[in-house]
Amino acid sequence: MFLQRVVVFCALLGVSWCTEDWTFPEGFKFGAASASYQVEGGWNAKDKGENIWDRFSHAHPEIIKNSDNGDVACDSYNQWERDIEMAKELGLDFYRFSLSWSRLLPTGLDNYVSEDGTAYYNNLINGLLAAGIQPMVTLYHWDLPLPLQELGGWTNPLIADWFTDYARVAYSLFGDRVKIWLTINEPIVICDVAYNTGVLAPGIRSPEHGANICTKNVLLSHAKAYRLYDTEFRSRYHGEVSLANQLVWFEPATADDKELAEIAIENVTGRYSHPIFSKEGGWPPVIEKMMAERSKEKGYSKSVLPPFTQEEKELIRGTYDFYAMNHYTSRLIRKAKEGEHTATWYFGGFRDMNAVLSPGSDWKPTASTWFYQYPPGIRGQLVWLKEHYGDMKFMITENGLATFGGLNDQDRIDYYESYLKQLLLAIREDGVKLTHYTAWTLMDNFEWTDGYSVKYGLYEVDFEDPKRPRVPRASAHYYASIIKNHSLNVVKPKNENDRLTAREEL
Ligand SMILES: *[C@@H]1O[C@H](CO)[C@@H](O)[C@H](O)[C@H]1NC(C)=O
Ligand SMILES: *[C@@H]1O[C@H](CO)[C@@H](O)[C@H](O)[C@H]1NC(C)=O
Image (cartoon, rainbow, N blue to C red; front, side, top):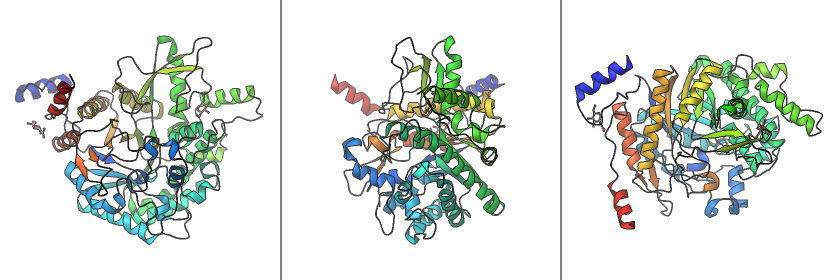
């Protein structure tokens, strides 16, 4: 069937690039994403409260590349109209952005709501809607109000109530116009990466306990915020709510490593998915068992992975309207040899696994040290989720490439093309119900510990210029033509300048 369609399509067009029909299903939506601390700036504008990234970047400039911080970032606090214009130029169906908790609730608690923060997000949301672009809103993209951190942040179980109170304010203010909500972005980075390394805010290293306690509290926070939407807002606003997981895909390095790869996936994907998306709820059984054994070996009387009560299991189970997946990279995994140094990768999920991770030998590197390209990984991951948790609706809420800059970003164009092709295959061949695709990111921004040195933007931003001008890259034109044609059968921009530079170097 598929092949016939391809042949007919190509015969009709009779053009050289045409070998297959890469058209997206009707109703498929394209967007681009950003996050508050990474783009807004205005870190102390009006009554905005201090958050953990304000504090961390000011107190520890030595940890961040070039001592950069998000004080001004892309100045989107002042330039939101230009951001909307860019979303329009690209022809986006939706724009994903996050609310700064401490811009809306300066102390983190709900007794005082900032008028300035409310006005800022109202302007952005109304401007997008006026341009025919749907807002997709993340409640938490890593910028916790500092007063809450001082009470323990994500390791204090009360965070679930603080977060739910914040969610209520956001749903009440914006829920009439925002129909897709993401509660928490990338729990694995908030918990595992942050507490395993200490190089992300809040800058606390506690691999054994911090990461695991945080994981449980993040899941409870998401669940309560989801239930709140269900009970108080859904009947009025008819929106959808989920949380966005960043999933790294693992392939067994040899046929002997299949079981190990499965365990790795369970610890990276399953730990943040099984409690919500599986039929039975709770931690992935294989991980719960392993962690109990390892904890015992280390002399603990209880597992360092905190258990759920039956009530908590029920609270969390089923708190989704779709699966939101951020995806960038993959790894090969194999058992460590006797005495071999086991890679405790920055995601940290391998502490107790005796495994070695590596990229495939032909996977292209990127500007981010952790990031190698392997397009089939995005498809493998979607199929794994469908097989393990069922035939639900999926959205890709982040995907994109890291470069060192330049307007002629052929690598990014190739990345988008190859990953989008894999997604079309997942839709057509594997029957994955994928409805949305989100490019990370609309424009270059503050990339956490990489500062401004690593670029993911469809638009280039000049961070030396106080006006922070934004210029579309070749990939922006390419993405706009994909959206316009609703297909990958578009003319790929040619990169003459890159070739010239290469020749000059010779
Ligand atoms: C799973 O990941 C957590 C958090 O990074 C880690 O503490 C734990 O040791 C990992 N489990 C295994 C079995 O490696
Ligand atoms: C859209 O597709 C048509 C062929 O169907 C092609 O001729 C055109 O160049 C494409 N548009 C862009 C902007 O690539």
